[in-house]
Length: 347
Image (cartoon, rainbow, N blue to C red):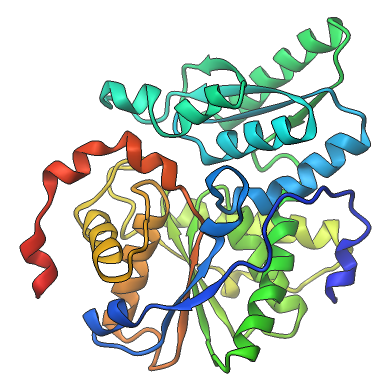
């Protein structure tokens, strides 16, 4: 399959593409390897960027095609997806309804009002809450109920469901991104064999897998670092999502169980709970590369990449960190600075 296979899906233009592919020489030196690179999908442009912008091009393309007047989405309090959806809706002249789930308990007040939440409100989203944090199907049903109320009021709602029970349209953004990455790497003579990415909803992870395999590059390993659930459950979710993406594209049998690589070594206590290793990775990226990572997704994924590099998993070949954004969440985790340990960066 070539990228032309994506043209049958309605789409809106939201992202700045291509995003940069940059070397990380100082981080490479810090862990004693050569050839660590970063694909800067934190630079997709809309509302402080991130991977959700590529995904929303397909969801909101369908919403516009259906003449939607309002878009609904659910996510954690500091959801990057909700923030980008609110911004995209504003840009496209749609109303936005956000449902925030209580996934991370015991957080300080700044978590409830700063970072992505501040931006949600700035973009004019209508905000609702959902008391459970690990009930995806229930959260989706709650969104559907809100959509029914809006329909009764004469609105035309479009719901972005995030549970795996619905077609993963957003993953198509990363089928395309795989091709963009291959083209950039070829232009820069980067002969990479590994990509590291945060693995949560699985749409970015699965989209990359399908995109690489569709272009004959199944030899490239995609390492998913778990940010929400344990490896066994996440691996099954990635495979299910990849197979659903293949079905959307009328393909079969590209990605199998042996192609799905996930680790929960850096998950810690769970979603949104930082770890010593992720905090160290965040500080290392900031102080050695001027690169911002967040405690929820990219900090854990970057910790995973550095661990893989130190263990020799990349076998001396270049590896690419897929930076999926999340920068606003840093402002909801201000206590990170209070746990600073600059001496550890001098090892």
